[in-house]
Length: 243
Image (cartoon, rainbow, N blue to C red; front, side, top):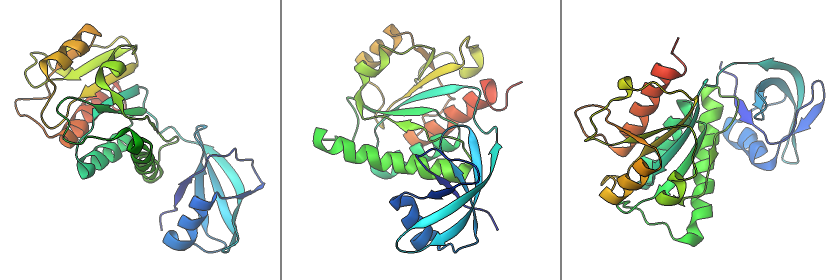
């Protein structure tokens, strides 16, 4: 039976008791339905995974004892900052989930001219919290050692300008492919567009900020497919599976 993994925000100390935060405790009691004596793996973004055992599972509290710390290498050698144009709800959720599974380091949902979804300013924090929960669940299930940060939705022009690193713009009409490139930095910025693509002005902003336009192949991909394709390719060429 596969041992459940749970992300916690607090420091963990070997051989000490730790009380899970309420959201995690509810997940253990009501979703996983784990009992006293069950094993669990905890992680808190410090690079370690902690083996623990439940010693109390009640409505009042869920408490574990930390038994062992293990350092596992599941993170990519690349730091991937993904600028992802906001798409329809289920497509965006899927893209964020798979991006986390494929090793992205941080994601900024981008407001673009042709985005089908228009988020009101008062709804952005709530939506961002929803996406952050998806990222946390994906990190827990995929064995990652930290949960990528989902930033608040940002205007495209504001996001592209201050960035540093190797910058990639997905553009179906571009002449170059990822295989033509050889990044000098392990910090990679990836920018992909909405359902209707970027406008000419948005492409101009990105190119002026130092992004290199690349195509992923002869076909135009959906937003969520593009996320899978570009991150898999980047990891294959320069990250997880590269020499």
